[in-house]
Image (cartoon, rainbow, N blue to C red):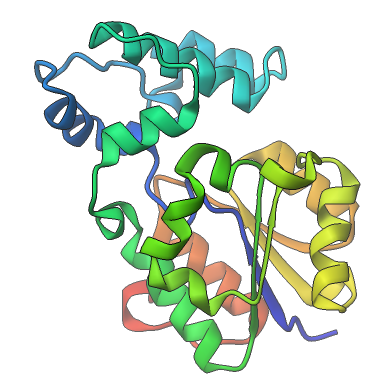
Length: 223
């Protein structure tokens, strides 16, 4: 079956990860350059908490809650929600943290008549409901399934079923892209085609997804 829908995770796939924007965060919060040293997938050996998350000893939400509290303490405040960290770290220009490779892939898929969906564990939880209205790119997506509201987190099979049911197509017609391997494994078990997004090589990852959709790669994603 030819794939007809591109299903994307949001944080880390469409948006750049907080690990990638430490200098922007430090500047926004008035912290000395080099204060934030945790690097997650960009330097796993230096981030034991990330290693715990990858080993399923803690959840992704646990990881980010710990970082939220940590950064809040650095500025002398008691932060209790990931939304606070994201909004304070990223400021008013939401487009500045969106991957240009994601924009290129989304536009190419849309132009080719492919359907677009987001399957996120924490879109509004982390970014805030207002974020959607401030990012015109999200208007291209006909389906957004967000565990902030459903309470069903990937890799629970019900999360994938929610997006395929909303699209009204078989799982195998979807190309799912996520940066967390366990979510990719969950997608494969649910019958979706899947691309494990490599945050170190975003163009190549989006290129593979377009290949599975039978969509020509734009110049930014050329092999």
